[in-house]
Amino acid sequence: MKIKEQIKLGVCTALLLSTLAACSNEDASSGGAQSEKGVKITFYTVDQNNAFTEMVKAYQQVRPEVKIELLNAQAGTDYIQKYEALQASSNPPTAAMLEQQTVLKFKDALLDLEPEKAKYEALTLPGTIERNLFEGKFLGVPWTTQGYGLLYNKRVVEEAIGGTFDPASVKTRNDLEALFKKVEAAGKAPVMIHGSDWSLGSHYLSLAYGLQSKKVEDNRIFLEGLKKGSVDLSGNPQINGLLDTFDLLKKYNLRKNDPIVADFNKDTIDFAKGNAAFYFMGDWAWSVMDPVEGRDKEFGIMPVPINNNPDDYGNQEIPVLEPFLYTIDKTRSTPEQQQAAKQFFEWMVTSEQGQSAIISKMGLIMPYKDLKVKGANAISPSISNYVKEGKVINLGMFKFLPGDHYAKLGASMQKYLINKIDRKGFIKEMESYWKSQASN
Figure 1 (tube, rainbow, N blue to C red):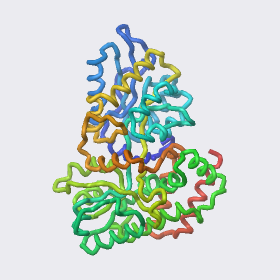
Figure 2 (cartoon, one colour):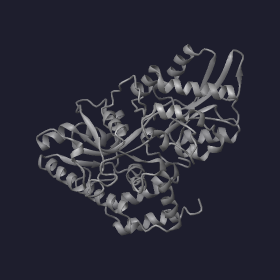
Figure 3 (cartoon, rainbow, N blue to C red):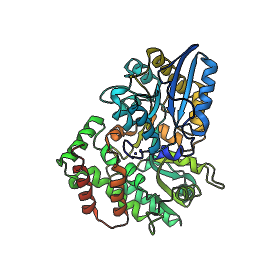
Figure 4 (cartoon, helix red, strand yellow):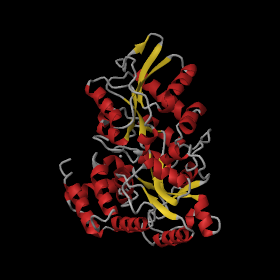
């Protein structure tokens, strides 16, 4: 969901990157320095499993004249605060891996990568670059994609239906409930809802904004209408459709007796072992699922149907976004450093060594066409297929969500989950929250 403290649609990435090293002890004052032997750049990132350290070492075998100094911070709010501090001290890194909200905040300090845009449009899957424009500007190179929806345990579902499961067969909410009933009749819990505020407020509720239109600008205008109080949410079909489906998920939830304990590890392990057929979550769950002893082997993902019209936007699409982008400073870096950073980025996303670090070592998905490496993440192929087929909900509006959105409205979703408020009460809280953002 972090200009202030937001866990990106992703808390996902924060979970994946949670074991990382603290800030480098190396001198961070050389963001604009030139080496005697060539060019020197600084790169601010979260070095998961030392993957970036290894990439830098490999790249410097290829380009020894380029010295790259890694500036590492831990994932989460700390990561953003330290970047903001570097900006405030007029000592920004040459290059940085930034989430979309932070790119938006510092857009005037970042290099416009328009000359690189056509190249990356050719390299990436359709729609990737369009999702990552900022007022029409290409300010960051996408390197990973995250997708979420209803993860499914193939064995559990197929035992319940007595045959091969095709996720495309579920096109409506009624289709989903019919499937849930079969799973329940087979003695298994149909679905699991992870009751944390980030999952409910950032992932589930954000669908309501992305589903308003396929165009990011239309969805931004919708958010502005919420701030002005000109949008009637009680009559909004997307909001009501999502809440109707949420009611269904609540009814068949494995955790319905204690729905907001929100133990991510326990929920994810239980799903991996087949204690629930479906799990509202994203591909980042694989980092917990993979090492589970005795887990099932085959998993996939499918959309969250929002109504009973199979052709409506959202019933056959999954939400995706690129949570972090590679960016380049334009305020302190020289043209030579900017060029060196561009070349390093391109090498990371197109070379076998770079792709191996991202896909195999980090376990992430890349939105690129020519992938030389196959990852072990069992959920990735399903997400990649939706992206390749263009069956995606464009969450490009995510960058416009306020920093406290997931916490405030996630808490409202939690109250709705435990029936502390009804739908009318939830919509009232949602409208009040957005009106409070009118001055932002």
